Amino acid sequence: MGLSFDGLASGLDTTAIIDALMDVEAIPRTLLSNKSDDRKLVISQLQSLNTALQKLLTSAKDATGATALAQVKATSSDPSVTLVAKPGATAVSTQVVVDRTATAHTVVSRAMTGFTADPLVLTVESASGELVEVRPASSAPADVARALSGAGAGIVASAVSAGADGSGQALYRLQVTATETGAAAAFRVHLGDAAAVAAGTATDLAGETGAAVVTQGADAQVRLWAGTAAEQVVTSPKNTFTEMFAGVDVTVSKADAAAVTVSVAADPAARAKAAGDLVGQVAAALSGIAKGSAATTPTGAGGTTTLGVFTGDSTVRALRQALTDAVQLPIDGVSPSTIGISVDRYGALSFDEKKFLAALETDPAAAGALFAGVAARVQEVSDQYSDKYDGLLTARITGQQSEVSRMSDQLERWDLRLDQRRATLERTYASLETMLSRLQAQSSYLTSQLASLPSNSDGGSS
Image 1 (tube, rainbow, N blue to C red):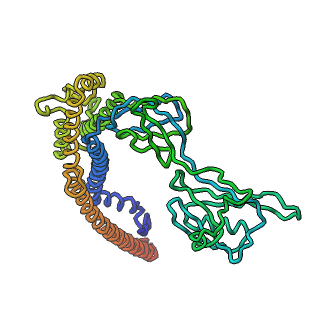
Image 2 (cartoon, rainbow, N blue to C red):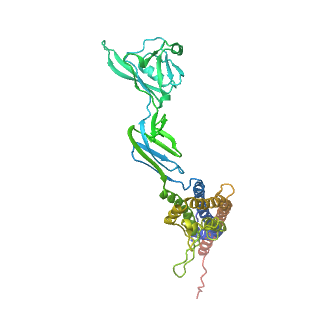
Image 3 (tube, helix red, strand yellow):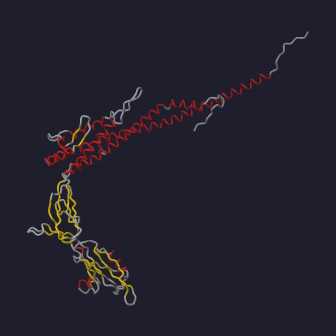
């Protein structure tokens, strides 16, 4: 911060004088700073537009696929049977009888104070005959349960309190459950090592007196066309039957002898929404470009016209035209307006849902192909301008950022130059004040000397 010499000798406001001179000196720097701010605003708007284009690119890619307008609606007459239908799923209507749901195999041991075998070895046998030996840290039921759960044998075990024996000792049972449902996840827990199991001398914990198989692991089972010559039994280790029908997963939650009606059919409303969403994204992009390109005219005398951030930007103007062409030019001689996609004379894009639904009802394949063609052109334009490596809009943003970077360097040099200029002015005015102070001191000295000189009188004698 510079020194202030205001009024030291001259009585002048030298700080104000220096500030005024610096304001004049800083005019080029101010103009450059304003230009840099304008460029930053343009960059921000271009980046927002580029982000919108990248989102549009993703949506357009999805809309060009074979299932873009293949939304279907799945229904069931009973909430215990639910359907999940993928786009393009085969239309179907039939009845399903749920014979049973999938269960997880569960066994409970007899009540005991602990295991007596030493060393204690248990062997888990899977439904396929695979054997896994388990060696607990101790014979305490809690340690045994912990070891079984951590053996990686597809089971989880817990020690459950079972009262006390005649001598008052606490009794426990081991409950062991498969981590997966289905018959293939069933198991047996043997007291003994793998060799004993192979020899048939190991004890099955579920076969001891007081023990039980609480739940037998079983697959879910349903029947299609029940009661007819075409009756078909379908099983699944889980309660979800994947691809029971083409593109359709069926989940059951309870067994019931009554047939449940399930159906999958085309969903025109969902198809229209999918098409409308893409058109809406394009319309939003075109609207944003239009607003950014519009100039604000003065409302009264003496006002100035304010240009939009995109006004005069040839890249943005070309993008707007390319997007407009993508959604309005004919495809194989057929105008997109026949499926409700149109651009009015003011350049506003709109979507007529009723017209689109009518086109789907008349010729679903033709309407879908036309929409996919529009989406493909939108994808091409979006990719051409927003590609992160060589997109036209990306290059425009990069160029603007480079210019702002150069301006930033120039502003730094201007700041250094102006600081040096202010220091020079402060030194100059300080010297002037010092010189004026000396002159004033000399003037005061001379004045005092002159005042002290003797004066001559002109009086005569008679």
